[in-house]
Amino acid sequence: MSLRRRLLLYLLISAPLVWGVAMLLSLRAARHEVDELFDTEMIRLARQVQVAVAMPVGSTAPLPADAGSSGEADMRDLAIAVWDAQGRLGVADREGVLLPYRSEAAGFVDLQIEGEAWRVYYLQSFDGSRLVAAGQRVYERDELSYDLTLSQLLPWLAMLPILLVAMAWAVRRSLAPVEQLSAELRARGADELQPVPVETAPIELRPLLDAMNGLFRRIEAVLAHERRFTADAAHELRTPLAVLRAQWDVLRRAAPGAERERAEAQLDRGLARLDRLVTQMLALARLESGSSAVAQRDIAWPEIVAQAMGDCLALAERRRVELSCEGLEGGARAPLALLGDPDLLTVLLRNLLDNAVRYATPGSTVVLRFREHALEVENDAEPIAPAQFERLGERFHRAEGQDESGSGLGLSIVRRVAALHGLAVRFAPRADGRGLKVTVGFEPAG
Image 1 (cartoon, rainbow, N blue to C red):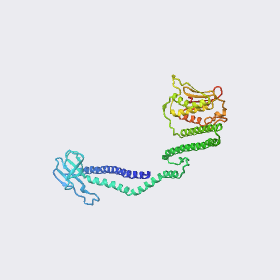
Image 2: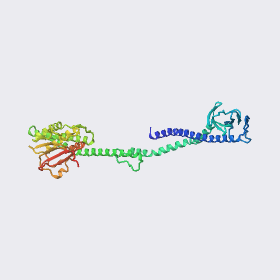
Image 3: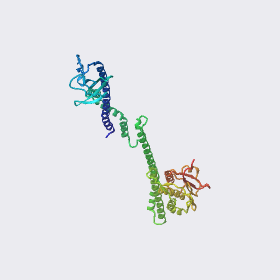
Image 4: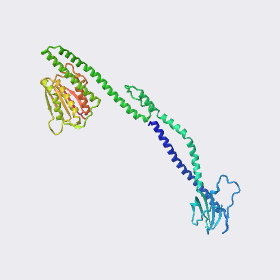
């Protein structure tokens, strides 16, 4: 059901209910006013009769009827009676309806007379010689109360169709901003993610528009990542594919022997580089898209270190580089204790070790060192220019003059995994100015 129909339905249900309650309240108010009016008149009438009637003891006589017109009055709904001290009826205004004698009565009493409800007022004289009673049929009061209430309600009922039209128009006008927003969003293309203006929108729609604009910004960021990743991937894959094509041509034309073996080795290295590039690109894409959820488990660093070093062992043996780990022995405090995803942290450590081994001086040692709030990976290599430190960690960036194959994505993946775990990555040369020391840990408290 649409919002407009729902509002109209609620209004159509609520309006009669509110009117019904208002009618009951109006009826009670009208009845109260009528009772107050007639009770006052009955008191005044009883006192006038008490003063006016002077009758001998034991005599009875009806009150004289008015000679003139009674107007709109219905005298059949009224009755007056006067009794002496012995309870003998002395005066009655009419025959047929006789008010009952009650010697001890004083004030208003509700009675049933001949099957009908009456309200009777009893007034004792000061010397106790007379009792005056003035009564009125309750139906007269009810009739007047209903007439007063209906006289107010009927005009409202007659105006109901006009009110419904006015409510429908008001609902339509109130929902016009929603319809305009819907039309604007329907007219947008898939790549039109500019924010919806909030300043001119109704206050009730602003939280929705703020959330929608936030969603647009996140989608735009994801699309920007995808476009940048696609452009970078197209650029980076072009070179290894061209190299593989050339190496394949050489291999096809090479005669059996040393030349063919060299071509096969070059082709193997090219395929390995392409495989590494694609693997790291896919890992980086998953991390940047947020599809890799970060688990919250206690990290067992010995298992992660064993896995990462095992993955890098073949490369280390080929380059004659030794792998060393320090600070992981049992102590009073566990090194770099945190909650996180062991698989992602294995990727982080493997990329750090792979990068350190790949560019380390042959015959040197790559050291993995654990501290209380950080881990460090350092190698021995030629000094890095200060300008290169500023670009370390950029996607697809590799320092010039490198002989080792690489994609320039390893340190980018390290930074992304560290950020997902609330860790910071810092690059610096070793203490002797050579090589590279990468520190991954918590930011120091300011």
